[in-house]
Each structure stands twice: as structure tokens, then as C-alpha cells.
Image 1 (cartoon, rainbow, N blue to C red):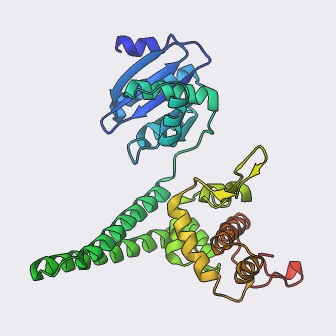
Image 2 (image 1 turned 90 degrees about the vertical axis):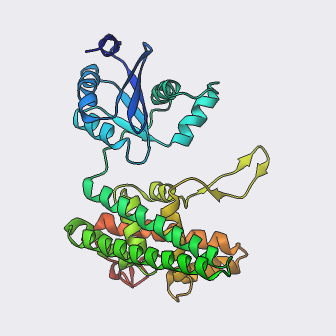
Image 3 (image 1 turned 45 degrees about the vertical axis):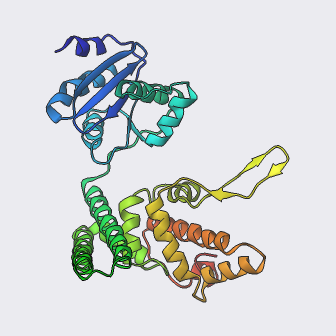
Length: 332
């Protein structure tokens, strides 16, 4: 055990730790005490340190969401009984600047995360299960290839040279083939998992939510069915936030949330407002009362995700009418 590793065990009982995650290494900072350590981002290097942190019994360990590179540390710490919060890098950077830390190094980031844990007490979360993580990775790949194809189509409009146009066209065709293969694999993964399949069937039963939107919600909004309406709306980024100060009462607006989920809900809402059911009526009534169309559309998006959350929590599919509520639409 190195001298730095030995220092970790000398830290007082009430501790918080921050871990700055890199592709090849982790910077760990334990507060109070100011103990710092850099190790490799490997299972072998993490093992002894995880054991030491588990012995300390820290109140909370925070690390930033960094693609796939934080997953190993999160999983090993969680398995060892250490509470771990995964925070948005943008928020931790804002916190650092609010404390006067303008410089940025891996050690400073680790220290910032430890202080963030102590002062902000973000909620500890369990690692995403393997199936949901696989679904997330597949949808990330699908989103990337979709964006690439869209970029290539725009490039095709900028050239008249036959060879360039031919090559761009071939790349577009290949991208579309890759997209179809990814979508097929996504549906196969869902079909092979009974729990995912049941949740998927519930989602696609809702008017406006198709297979793609349902799969995105399963991959990137795994909290569906386990939180309340206000929380699920905030996670999806469709909860209106106040914008008031003194005598000024500004327009409420949506902020934060998960963009990919919000974009999927937008497409579902566009489909809904063309229908003659409750959601379409909600949109038209709001516009008639003078609400801007975008505000009305956001309201439909919010109703969609809340409905999905409710149905999954109750483990039932959507029905046009609810006999328990005097045949009123189940959204009413």
C-alpha cells in the first residue's frame, strides 16, 4: 500500500469523498483532511481503495457522469455498500466557481466534488442495471448515426461534383443501414427481457408514443414508475420553472432535464395534438385561451410523461376510457 493510500485511512469518521473520473485514471479527494490520491481507472487499482473507503463509512461519495468511464467506480463502490451520487459536470463546475475556484485541475475537481457532497448532499443512486445500460448505449449509437446522416444530407446539397456527391450518397446509405440494424437490435433486446417488454407495451399503448419514443424513455428515463409526477416532469425537462424577482413576474419556462427524452416527447406531442382525444383538446383549448402554441405543446408533453409514469407505476396499459371515472378519458 502506498503512503497516499495509507493516509486515506487516517481521515476522521465523518467523511465525504469526491472522485474526478478520467479515461485512464481517477483522482480521489477525501474531506475533511485533504487527503488526495490518484489511481488507475481499473478494477485492480480500484479494489484496495474501495475497501478503504468502505471501512471509513463515508456519508457520501460523488463523481461526475463521464460517459462510460465512471461506471466501474460507481459499480464497485455501490457493491461495497458506499453511497454514491453521480452529478452533472456543469453543476459541479458552477459550484466550484461559486466558491471562488476558477482554476481547473483533476485534483481541484476531485476536491470540489467532495465539498459538493458535503454542502449540497446530492441523492445517492444505484448503478444502472446492465440491460438498461445496453439499451442506453444502443440508443446513443442510433442518435449519433441519425445526426451523421442528417449532416451528410446537408452536405449533399452543397456540392455539384459527381464524385463528391456519389461518396456522400454512399455514406448516407451506409448510415441508414446502420440505423436500421441498431433499431432492430434495440427491439430484440427489449423483446428478450420480460420486464422491459411489459414497460414497452405500456408505453406504446399511449397515443402519440411510438416504438422509438418508448425505447428512448426506457433507456434514458429509467425512473419511470418510481417517482411522482412533479419529479418525472423535471427529469424529462418539461416542468415549468418560475422566473420571478421582486415585483417582476416573468414567464415560467422549462429548464434542465434530459434533452433526448424531451425531444422524443416533443415528437409524440406533435402527433397527439392532431387527434380528437383529450390531449388534442387540451392543446386547442390552451391556444384558444391565448396561450402560445409552444406553451400548449409543452403542456401536452408534460401530460404525456406523467401519464406514462402513472401507467408504469400501476402496471397497466392505456385505455381510451376509464370505467372507474365515469367513462372520462384517463388523462382527465
